[in-house]
Amino acid sequence: MILSGKGIQENVVKGKLVIEPFEPKQLGPNSYNLRLHPELATYDAQILDMKQPLTMRRFNIPEGGFLLEPQKLYLGRTMEYTETRGFVPMLEGRSSIGRLGLSVHITAGFGDVGFRGFWTLEIFALHPIRIYSGVEICQIFYHEITAPYEEYKSRKYQDNRDMQPSLLYQELT
Image 1 (cartoon, rainbow, N blue to C red):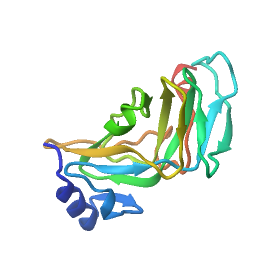
Image 2 (image 1 turned 90 degrees about the vertical axis):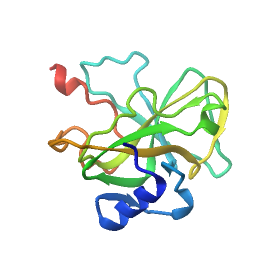
Image 3 (image 1 turned 180 degrees about the horizontal axis):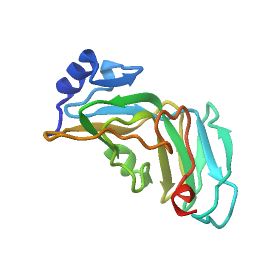
Image 4 (image 1 turned 60 degrees about the horizontal axis):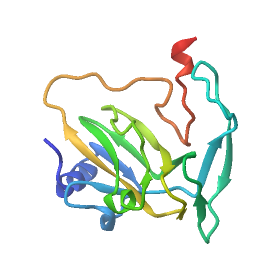
């Protein structure tokens, strides 16, 4: 079962979901729109080696927006911090954003029950596109868990306060 917008708001009030800051105007019929933080990053390396730690170059989105280059990966993050208790969070790009040829969460939209932190976004443009900080770029929705479960406990991404590069190398070394 997927929570309705009213269900999301009720569970925020009950403390089973945390979305900070929470703005009722960002609530949809069955999701909540999350906004793009003003900082983006790109990897320093031209060839990414999944067995090696990766460094990033960070930069701020100017007030007039930033032109994303096609076929280039950018990392961003949500402005909202989330916590999930008893639900599986899912993150998807908004259709209005996708119709501009912008993918905001390439493959990792499936969250884990018990996740706490900001969502790192894998942003990829098919065409040149000007992007702005604060834009409602993606939406979070929640599936209810109906059987016993263990909460997410990974040290890699839990309790993050910032966008994070891939930490896959920790599993492979």
